[in-house]
Length: 356
Image 1: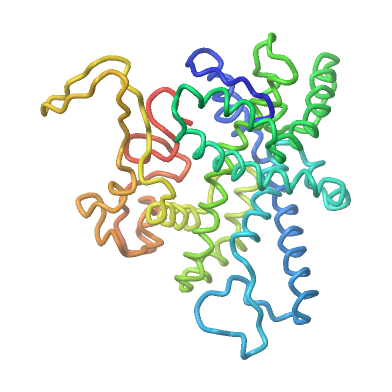
Image 2: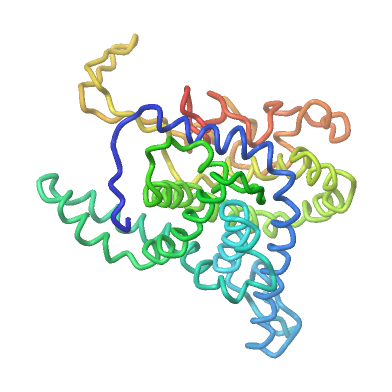
């Protein structure tokens, strides 16, 4: 990835991301949300406007799901591309600052947004290919071919001046808008070079966007596949709960439960929490794991286990409502927790001390 020399080790470097995302990022989220809201709205309008220009109609069947509306004058839109663009725009604002998502400056940052949207696919496809190579040649081959990763190189070249300017202004104690980049700069060890900061930020972006894009796409498909949820969710978004979300970063219980159910049924990874054994180990049931073996959790199977979930194959948008919401819905919750909570019952964010 654009010359990134990643160190396959665990140490104090990991606390940089924990502090930048879990602590500072959560505190600063209410300040970023209004910029994200306007960026998403503008991006969706741009996507729809492009479809109107192509098809010559205002009647857009945005996601092409359900009945065939072509005969009624509607045109279908590519759901994956539209959602990835909206998520990429929102993520760019949260990660790299409002200037990367401002409407008036968007045309100047279009190339960056394109790179941000495509870099995860570029890296993941390359990684899948390289991991199939023999270990004796994988390292050298990866270094040679990853230098030609176009989107990673574009992101690096556009972010490096930003990081240099931010670090220079940080030393002068100049105030500026909070975002993930700034939080990471302030949390990073002093011996990190500007290039190292850029590489770490890109790696963090790839890990986040690479899963958020598919998750958001599935959520949209589930929304239109279970259209009975559209009106309740719209009412919640148009009510006081959304204002509370903008002010505190917390709220929207119906939306939270809907997204949890969507993630439960559409896990992009069949396994989670991959760990490599550092020594031989034998479990209490006799299962033996040898040093060097990989162990992982069958996450998708757990999320559709009838012992854990009633009617696990059925989409139930209220399944994860907290106890305070159950009285209104008349249904018992599976667990009283938010999507962003982590623990052994919800492994989307990892487990143990290094979970996000």
